[in-house]
Image (cartoon, rainbow, N blue to C red; front, side, top):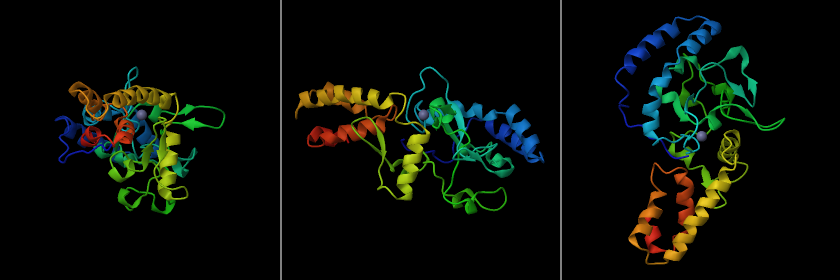
Length: 264
Ligand SMILES: [Zn+2]
């Protein structure tokens, strides 16, 4: 997970302001959960911001930093719009953050692995979907009272640097909590890693294999690498590199070499 920073003003596509105003007004006029659900299912206009969201992350999933090669990205609502589950159990009354359905700052570009529900076995499920636990239900946001700033989400947010920093990366390719066990920070990282399946679907093995090749190159290059080797290694740190946070950590294990230190 690498920080996604949106410069303000956000420079949204020109037509968005008109769409946003119309959809938000129409949605506010729907008095019941059923009517709001029908409206939102027919007016998924957030798809119009997919290219804008994708440009911000250099065509990578905001959560896992993976590139979605064979399936389109989803626009995830960080705070789910139509219903919220906590550890698989829906909140009463069909509660969802419907009033945030068209707010660009609630959107996260997500690969389908991170976003959609998938059953791994009889008891294990992956995917964010409608999951949105917070530290205390007493601070659950509401349209007219509690604000989002008062909530402490369990999911790590790729738009918050201190959340991204709660994930560590081993050269075995696995993502791990950076904080000690027993802390809220550790729990948030553990939960996000498991729920979004960061270490599933052979991804750690792929990362480890790529790193082994790169690590060998770094070792062979020694302390005086040719310029093209430096260029090659530096590409793994670029913003558009898949899993660049992992490669930054892995390359950092060679900090004893001056040219590596200079790259980092
Ligand atoms: Zn993802």
